[in-house]
Amino acid sequence: MVPRQPRRGLLLSDVALEVWGDPIGHSLSPAMHTAAYGYLGWNWTYGRRRVDELSFPTELSRLDAAHRGLSLTMPLKHAAFAVTGDRDARAALTGAANTLVRTPAGWRAFNTDVGGIVEALREQGVVAPERARIVGAGATASAALVALAELGARDVEVAARRPDAAATLVDLGERVGTAVTAVSLGDRARRAVDVTIATLPGGASVDHSVADELAATGGALMDVVYGHWPTDLSRAWDRAGASARGGEGMLLHQAVLQIRAFATGGVDDPLPREAEVVAVMRRALVGD
Image (cartoon, rainbow, N blue to C red; front, side, top):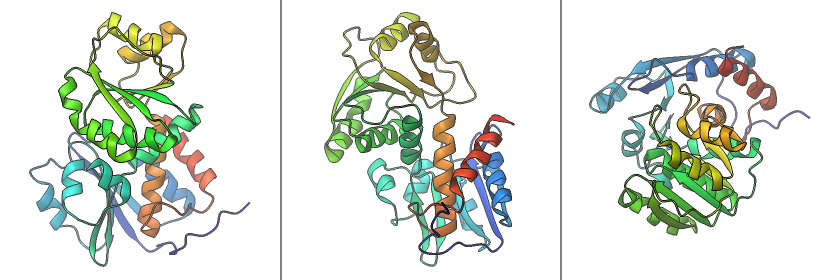
């Protein structure tokens, strides 16, 4: 079956794209995007640039019209959200954007992390979780919560070192129809959940006994970390004999949505031969 063409048509002229963040040298996005564009036969380039929050507005203002869009990683997701009032629904909910696309009226912001988490969980066999747990209350936790709500979760526990840091997630849960309870990461009284999404930074340590408690009741684990594998949590899941995956699936699928946005101005229409494009990007991600 040939995928239907995007509703607004593909932009196939020369296009310049980049990923920005600080640090940025570790990013796997250039490899994935370049592989996809090569497979599709598009004369697009995708580079990387180290940009911090302070220099972000200046760097953005210097881009010429050839720059169709940007991928944004930490610490720029809130800064990217703030530069425009034209945002997709997921960016508006999370208050964060990891994608900017140039339009005749200016920049449009997207949060493709949410969709990336949804598809990564589906690949892991998590399709309709009733109860879930998020470990950590940072920026990615908001995307994780919206993704869980989209999958149907109505009861989400947020385990954080400082439960008061989850106040914004409790408010977000009310907006997406999901009951959010904030607890201490060290709490030993755990209810069983269907899935756990870990959003702690790469290299963050979790006490051995705490990790084992989380694994015992945590269902499948998706740890958004990549490049710091295994994590303390993934080791605990291995000890428990439970499913644990890193953040590569999220990274892959959010990038597919970014390419859709760069090509058509939206994330809903599939790319030509999208299944084959995803396979090419996956091989680039793992270095094959």
